[in-house]
Image (cartoon, rainbow, N blue to C red; front, top):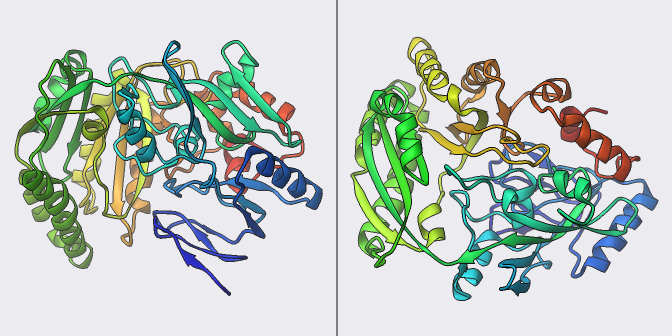
Length: 445
């Protein structure tokens, strides 16, 4: 059986096996299709329906859930890439769904434009990132999906549907984070603005100090986040704010040393040691929490928001009401301290303002995100299960692309507009062409 190795490390081929980036999800599709146009994609959807096969589109596989897995027709959008057009009057860009965020950011920068906010990696496709609710951190600016101003997708009958706040607004409200359940996204129109500079201030800070001053740190900074190192009282904080300049990027040597050598190379080696000798993890964590020093730099947004992530891991992330983040973090620390768990990966904390997207994790409420990680190849279930109990006690909403155990009954309680989404799905895909086991669990049969 022939197969190819993709850039993101997944093996695939004709009737071969697809695997996600984290290595915890695999699937054997009946066939794969790589359409070169919207018409070809629509034809692939119609043919799948005729053959009685489910359809899923997959980007770079950065989701840790099986949201993109299928034993039917796997749509690969890597030929649906590039910018369709830029509207400088409306300050929007229309981009093909399979465009990697990295390529989009570079293209926008060349045009003197930028997204307002983004997540901390840019390997995903634009449609994969938005469909699962990928976000960064922001006091006033929300997820990538919240920056969508228009959307085009192929629905279950093979037709092309466009939506915006004015055109099919009920579809627009849901499809910006559509989970692949409403159709295959083919293009997105995103709000952009003139490129600007961000000054990043990174520094270590004691865990208790961060929690005591969390509201102040959130209020005083456009973008605030921090990493807590379990088994320690240390964190590493990052504050990003707009700057009049001039630009002062991180020097090439220092950037390589801190972002590649320490944050990826040494961190990977430390996790290997921790996996082989779990008793050494607390000592490794104390060293890791002190490894990164304070630094300040000013650069274009995507260079400040994003970082290379070369250490493979598994992740669970929950959005909870922002006012609950401090007690939830205290509970998480107490749980780790009284357990026999050995956690070598830092906990990431970010925020987002309320938005109006039906199944956004920040829908209708200001939110804080707590993400727990384990390096790939180490047991994660006990840690994630204990963390999930804490998050769900605070009415947490799990990231759609990260590990969780919640189901439709739970989501119907924590998403007031959950019924709107499932009703729209009944209308657009009554025969469940875009079904898979994950959607059956989280949306219901």
